[in-house]
Image (tube, rainbow, N blue to C red; front, side, top):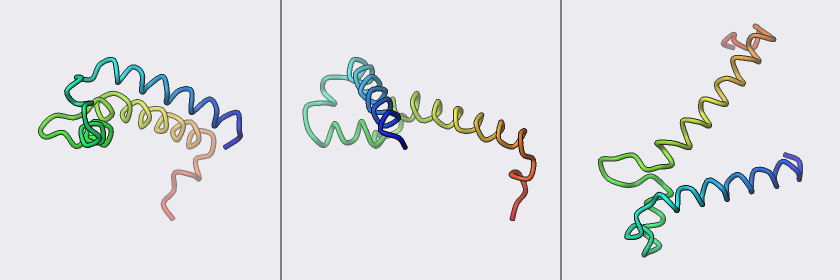
Length: 80
């Protein structure tokens, strides 16, 4: 990763964090344990915002990139 890409990634992560913070219950952010549970998706029974919003978008993006690569080079889709 180039320094410029690292900088862009850090800026995006900060923006994501700000959005998640705004939409997270203050009671979940009172302790380090609560923060960790929010970030690490450890809430019981319901997915956290990271799993619900961020992870699927990243997976979708990477999947689309892979599909584009396979389209450009069909040999990449073969199992070795």
